[in-house]
Length: 530
Image (cartoon, rainbow, N blue to C red; front, side, top):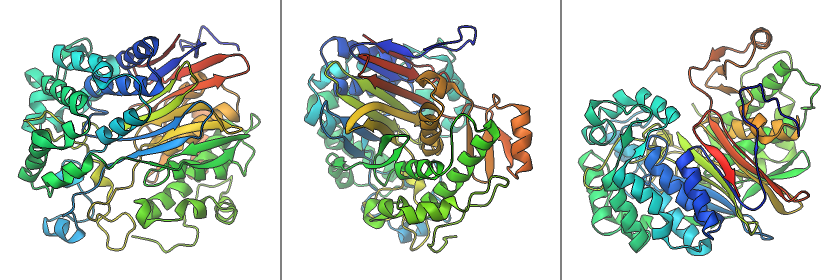
């Protein structure tokens, strides 16, 4: 393994026993502490995400949703769906009567489904955790009560969302102390959040969804015009459940994702399309970006029309990953021209944190927790301190659409953990943050590792592009010659003002008995091991 130490980049992290990679240093430290204290991968993941819900509040929180892929040593990979459901009264007719047309705004109370994260954490802990929740939440509770230093990337994103936070007086009180966003190095605290974590540690999911806390959250959302009831919240404590992963083969490995309602299927479709082309080192940068863009457009077009709650898109994964569909879509890709995406043969319809852990026993977890937009819905319940996510804004308000809002329905989700396997064994939990970018990011990261042979950190740090919403977004690291080539093919280029996503991964090198970890330099985090 060679590395350019003049590059101003960092190499991948190496360890022999256990490792954790997150996008925040305090989260990584909390997880590593748990691992060294005898906790397992699940314990470390829960400890780390709890900390991140405190120290990175615009990206995640206990009022959000969660998905995970868990690979017990020598066992079968399991997928955990911790996404929340719409209120029982949330019908298309009810939302239209409330004056909504076209889409559900981020800050609307209707963008808030019953949060699923705590249900998922508690189910995961009950089935596979080893240390008590009060031990796992200790660092998070301490940071919430006593404060923590705001890191540079968190401060940058926080400042960018200051005006939006200020539109909700309760959010402004918590997240705009002294009337402004904290700067890097400034301390911030959330005492009410510490109280919620203590309740969950003591009572489990019931401490969040039931009793006074659940009642207060439902009442606050109703005061904003929401349709939420105490019953909706009390039922939320058991809404997380285990499901079978979906998968495809790429580069001699099996790539596993959570099934719909997450967009992991989209990542698999992109990979299957790319597998129809030679993505090796002989491909130019412009050709590589072009192929990835065209595959992304086709896959995301199908996502937006077809992906939804699994109850309303049964069999979709099998159909979209079939040879006949992939061959049909791949044949529409031209190397010399960017083309508008089209569906296979169906009728047309008019912010997040990720972490990976591998423990000393060989258990691995790929874990993602999100409130969707920066600061989610921006709605904070003043009595509980819970910041609600905005995942319900993914619902469509189109009669007959698979993803149309309906009672107790889950919306289409962008958050997706990934797991790479070889011969039935997990060899790399991985994930890419960044809202809609995630499925595209999964495919780009894996192509860098498997097609180009890049080490994890190099694959993460490589310049990114994303074909979305009629544009090809590119980072500044993509050179002028490549940009000009892409423009001649018809791509509408947009230079992004902030980095595309973030990522973490841990590769299990059984041959050498080594763990290789990476954490995206676009974020504040790191990979650490023992």
